[in-house]
Length: 187
Image (cartoon, rainbow, N blue to C red):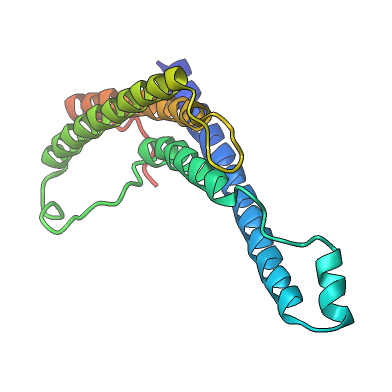
């Protein structure tokens, strides 16, 4: 059990790191694209040598930024699920549960972990089915012309890690409710 715990923890952390790197790349890409677009507009609007100099640099909006952002953010969302799940850091509303006894609270938490695990697995399966559909039809993105299924494939990979983590956490929360011992970290 300890080896599985360590593996899930490592997968959750690695997934979050990769998701963070992807988001940083998307931020830089979007920023450079906006700067390029604005410089290009300024170059077209300017008369004289400065406008010509800007245009001669070939500075412009980066083609396909929207497509890459769409695919990257979808991946990042699934990449961050495991770390939130493992450390129990999803948003919660404790207005009604704040006064409950620890044992009742443990069972309530276990119940919602099972529900969340079912939802994440369901979404991952639907995502996989969507990938299969795009894999078969050969559809590509508008500007970059990369196959749409590629974006689905990386999201399915992250969703698989999210599903594994969610199922592990659901089982762990049930074990915590039964035994009264903490298994998952409390942050």
